[in-house]
View 1 (cartoon, rainbow, N blue to C red):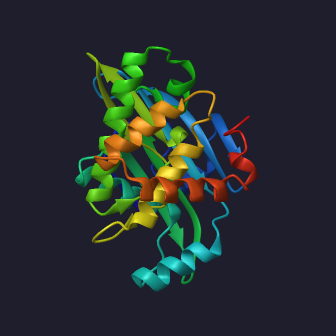
View 2: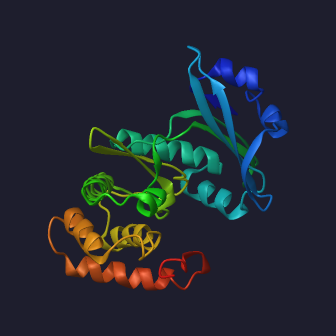
View 3: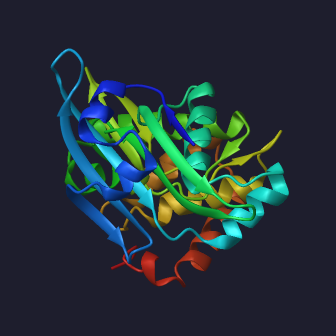
Length: 258
């Protein structure tokens, strides 16, 4: 199955309109996850001739457990690409921006996914991770932190939570002093009538632990949390701290305090 939401002519021209074409595509590979999936950056032009940058993500060796999980929860197998597509739609409907959705395709068996792909437009601005490392303007940083805290609160109040809320998965763009954000790689998203304090702490800890200590001060972190919670919430702060300590046991988060 293939769903194309926009840029049909460009996909036809690039040879990205069918699963077979996508499998054979060769171009500027920007990431290869040990043969399980890869990501390509594609520079082209839209129908009006303006520059257009697309990203193609191919899932070659999906985890069977994910397919089984979707079968039990939805009654049918959803690929990782479809989950990310549907999650982006949920975020968009809640007023949070994601990358422009272009197309996705999937090949699924009775129990699990065999292959899938996702194509999106590029995000605007720069990753939050890069912003934190490079921006020394205190006023601008304060504006970004404040706006982001309210954005994350809006997501949670909409009944959505993201365990992969990492600084590299959030793009920030500032126009006329006003920050805006886009979320990428939202393959995992929880939807609840009400997001629990534990789930809020989980998301905020993921954000916190991917913002290294040497790039974000304690004062900035406290102000962010106060803006998010609307007050000094010591119970929530304690939950976040406990979750951070848990995450720091994982190798991929050990750059937090280095």
